Image (cartoon, rainbow, N blue to C red; front, side, top):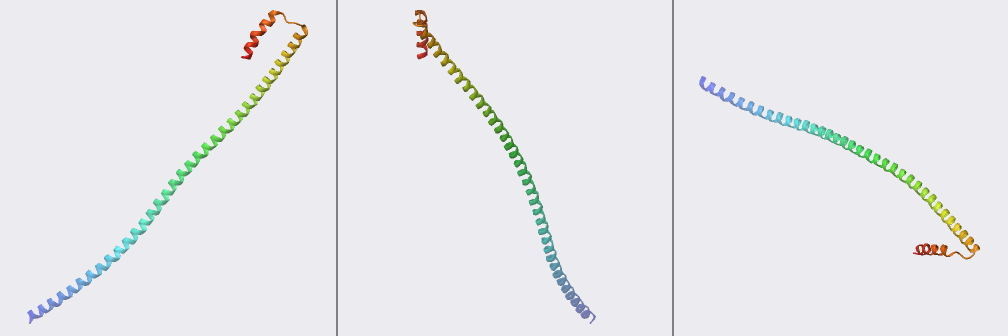
Amino acid sequence: MELSGACAELVKSSESSRLQLKNELAEEKQRNAEDRTKIISQMTAYMAALLEDTGASQEARWADRVECVERDITKATTKCQKAQAVYEKSMDAWMDSEHAILAGVLKSRDGIKSKIKTDWTVSDALGPTPLVIVDEKRPLTATTER
Protein backbone atom coordinates (compact mmCIF):
# COMPACT_ATOMS: atom_id res chain seq x y z
CA MET A 1 0.00 0.00 0.00
CA GLU A 2 2.71 2.19 0.65
CA LEU A 3 4.00 1.64 -2.85
CA SER A 4 0.63 2.13 -4.38
CA GLY A 5 0.11 5.27 -2.22
CA ALA A 6 3.51 6.54 -3.30
CA CYS A 7 2.68 5.83 -6.95
CA ALA A 8 -0.66 7.58 -6.57
CA GLU A 9 1.13 10.52 -4.93
CA LEU A 10 3.70 10.51 -7.78
CA VAL A 11 0.94 10.47 -10.42
CA LYS A 12 -0.92 13.19 -8.57
CA SER A 13 2.27 15.24 -8.17
CA SER A 14 3.24 14.69 -11.80
CA GLU A 15 -0.24 15.73 -12.95
CA SER A 16 -0.04 18.79 -10.72
CA SER A 17 3.45 19.63 -12.07
CA ARG A 18 2.24 19.10 -15.63
CA LEU A 19 -0.73 21.42 -15.05
CA GLN A 20 1.50 23.96 -13.34
CA LEU A 21 3.98 23.85 -16.26
CA LYS A 22 1.09 24.18 -18.70
CA ASN A 23 -0.23 27.20 -16.79
CA GLU A 24 3.25 28.73 -16.53
CA LEU A 25 3.77 28.22 -20.26
CA ALA A 26 0.40 29.87 -21.00
CA GLU A 27 1.24 32.79 -18.71
CA GLU A 28 4.67 33.15 -20.33
CA LYS A 29 3.07 33.16 -23.78
CA GLN A 30 0.68 35.86 -22.58
CA ARG A 31 3.55 37.93 -21.10
CA ASN A 32 5.58 37.48 -24.31
CA ALA A 33 2.62 38.66 -26.37
CA GLU A 34 2.18 41.69 -24.09
CA ASP A 35 5.94 42.40 -24.22
CA ARG A 36 5.92 42.16 -28.03
CA THR A 37 2.93 44.49 -28.19
CA LYS A 38 4.68 46.90 -25.83
CA ILE A 39 7.97 46.73 -27.78
CA ILE A 40 6.13 47.21 -31.10
CA SER A 41 4.32 50.18 -29.62
CA GLN A 42 7.59 51.66 -28.34
CA MET A 43 9.30 51.00 -31.67
CA THR A 44 6.41 52.61 -33.52
CA ALA A 45 6.58 55.66 -31.28
CA TYR A 46 10.38 55.78 -31.66
CA MET A 47 10.17 55.42 -35.45
CA ALA A 48 7.48 58.11 -35.61
CA ALA A 49 9.64 60.45 -33.53
CA LEU A 50 12.70 59.58 -35.64
CA LEU A 51 10.78 60.24 -38.85
CA GLU A 52 9.43 63.50 -37.45
CA ASP A 53 12.94 64.63 -36.44
CA THR A 54 14.33 63.61 -39.82
CA GLY A 55 11.53 65.47 -41.60
CA ALA A 56 12.12 68.58 -39.50
CA SER A 57 15.86 68.42 -40.20
CA GLN A 58 15.23 68.01 -43.91
CA GLU A 59 12.80 70.93 -43.95
CA ALA A 60 15.36 73.10 -42.12
CA ARG A 61 18.07 72.16 -44.65
CA TRP A 62 15.75 72.98 -47.56
CA ALA A 63 14.74 76.26 -45.95
CA ASP A 64 18.43 77.19 -45.57
CA ARG A 65 19.18 76.26 -49.18
CA VAL A 66 16.17 78.17 -50.52
CA GLU A 67 17.12 81.19 -48.42
CA CYS A 68 20.68 81.05 -49.80
CA VAL A 69 19.39 80.85 -53.38
CA GLU A 70 16.96 83.71 -52.72
CA ARG A 71 19.86 85.84 -51.38
CA ASP A 72 21.91 85.05 -54.49
CA ILE A 73 18.98 85.93 -56.76
CA THR A 74 18.38 89.17 -54.86
CA LYS A 75 22.09 90.11 -55.13
CA ALA A 76 22.13 89.31 -58.85
CA THR A 77 18.92 91.29 -59.42
CA THR A 78 20.30 94.28 -57.52
CA LYS A 79 23.58 94.10 -59.44
CA CYS A 80 21.69 93.90 -62.74
CA GLN A 81 19.48 96.85 -61.81
CA LYS A 82 22.54 98.94 -60.88
CA ALA A 83 24.26 97.99 -64.13
CA GLN A 84 21.09 98.85 -66.07
CA ALA A 85 20.92 102.25 -64.36
CA VAL A 86 24.59 102.94 -65.19
CA TYR A 87 24.00 101.82 -68.79
CA GLU A 88 20.93 104.05 -69.16
CA LYS A 89 22.78 107.01 -67.66
CA SER A 90 25.72 106.43 -70.01
CA MET A 91 23.40 106.11 -73.00
CA ASP A 92 21.66 109.36 -72.04
CA ALA A 93 25.03 111.11 -71.78
CA TRP A 94 26.08 109.64 -75.12
CA MET A 95 22.83 110.77 -76.76
CA ASP A 96 23.30 114.27 -75.33
CA SER A 97 26.86 114.31 -76.67
CA GLU A 98 25.66 113.07 -80.06
CA HIS A 99 23.02 115.79 -80.20
CA ALA A 100 25.64 118.39 -79.33
CA ILE A 101 27.98 117.06 -82.03
CA LEU A 102 25.17 117.03 -84.61
CA ALA A 103 24.18 120.56 -83.65
CA GLY A 104 27.81 121.63 -84.08
CA VAL A 105 28.04 119.88 -87.46
CA LEU A 106 24.81 121.51 -88.65
CA LYS A 107 26.01 124.90 -87.45
CA SER A 108 29.35 124.35 -89.13
CA ARG A 109 27.61 123.22 -92.36
CA ASP A 110 25.39 126.28 -92.32
CA GLY A 111 28.44 128.47 -91.74
CA ILE A 112 30.30 126.84 -94.62
CA LYS A 113 27.26 127.22 -96.95
CA SER A 114 26.95 130.84 -95.95
CA LYS A 115 30.65 131.43 -96.50
CA ILE A 116 30.52 129.74 -99.96
CA LYS A 117 27.49 131.82 -100.95
CA THR A 118 29.20 134.97 -99.77
CA ASP A 119 32.36 134.04 -101.66
CA TRP A 120 30.35 133.36 -104.86
CA THR A 121 28.46 136.57 -104.43
CA VAL A 122 31.71 138.50 -104.00
CA SER A 123 33.27 136.60 -106.90
CA ASP A 124 30.28 137.36 -109.14
CA ALA A 125 30.40 140.97 -108.05
CA LEU A 126 34.08 141.22 -108.96
CA GLY A 127 33.43 140.13 -112.48
CA PRO A 128 34.99 137.42 -114.62
CA THR A 129 37.29 135.08 -112.79
CA PRO A 130 40.91 134.88 -113.83
CA LEU A 131 41.83 131.65 -115.63
CA VAL A 132 44.02 130.38 -112.78
CA ILE A 133 41.20 130.42 -110.26
CA VAL A 134 38.79 128.72 -112.68
CA ASP A 135 41.35 125.97 -113.32
CA GLU A 136 41.74 125.42 -109.60
CA LYS A 137 37.95 125.20 -109.15
CA ARG A 138 37.48 122.48 -111.77
CA PRO A 139 39.49 119.70 -110.08
CA LEU A 140 37.89 120.62 -106.78
CA THR A 141 34.40 120.52 -108.33
CA ALA A 142 35.14 117.20 -110.06
CA THR A 143 36.35 115.67 -106.79
CA THR A 144 33.32 116.95 -104.94
CA GLU A 145 30.90 115.60 -107.54
CA ARG A 146 32.36 112.10 -107.33
